[in-house]
Image (cartoon, rainbow, N blue to C red; front, side, top):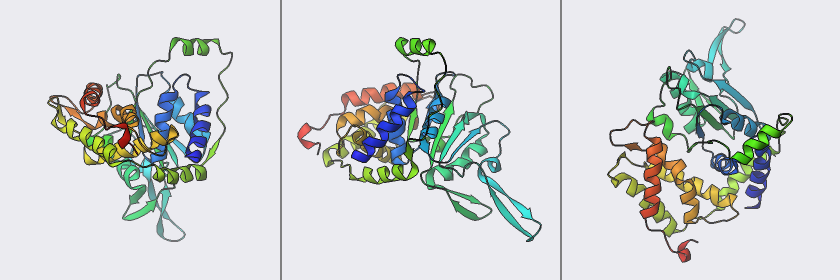
Amino acid sequence: MSQIQTITAALRQSVSQQIYGKEAVIDKVLAALLCGGHVLLNDIPGTGKTTLARSLAQSLDAQFHRIQFTPDLLPSDLLGVSIPDTKSGTFVFRKGPVFTQILLADEINRAAPRTQSALLECMEEHQVTVDGNTYPLSAPFFVIATQNPVEMSGTFPLPEAQLDRFLLCLSLGYPAREQELELLARKAPPAPPKPVVTAGELLAAQQELHGVTVSPAVQAYIADLAEASRTQEQIQLGLSTRGMLSLLDVSRAMAAIHGRDYVIPDDIKEIAPDCMSHRMVLRGGAWDSSAQECRKVVQELLAHVPVPKETQWN
């Protein structure tokens, strides 16, 4: 796991120069990046969502595009459009900003549903289909979306299928008092990060992640969590099979970041609320408004589902 630890340490240090005291959240974003998943940053204004996304993109030597989502944004503004070529008499496809490696979808819930859903194929299949033609996206392809759960006027809640495409839903929250004092004391904002990891190094680390093993007992623990979420009285819609597999993948990444080549239950407990809660619906609750309550329910599940013995971990 040396390659994974090397690049995650470099990225963590670089991003931490911009976002103070949020190393745990940064590690979770890096875990999603290693898995080839995507991240939704759901938090109030002014907590550093866009700064975190931009800092990570600047720390990677990879292509980066930022899209400000607005109500009048069209799918073609994301994906691209075919335009007539007067010389050849044919249509030529002009690629949109989604053809990148790191995509920041800022305030994603301000766009109309049909524009939001234009990202579905990109996020799941890493490709774009326009006018019957399919165009592959570059690897790695990583979407970091942000949304503000407070200012809901004029916004469009993400549909269930869209939320399920995000590996993790994270919240930065307020920094500790010590970090806020550091921010107040600095004489000038830090310089923008310089690339510390190349796209090739990241792809190599993603391949190394396949070497992280998950014992049958730990796999059964993940399955038990999924089953418990489906039978919990408070939950109307529990964890899907895709969500269960996502939990397995991101647990591997957390284990590798911690320097192990096998997953332990603590890896699952650390990441489960961020991986499970946005995929579940409380009884009588809306998909998006129940997310915080679902986190509490996930914590209860983690407290009650039996944990495998240490001798069964690897």
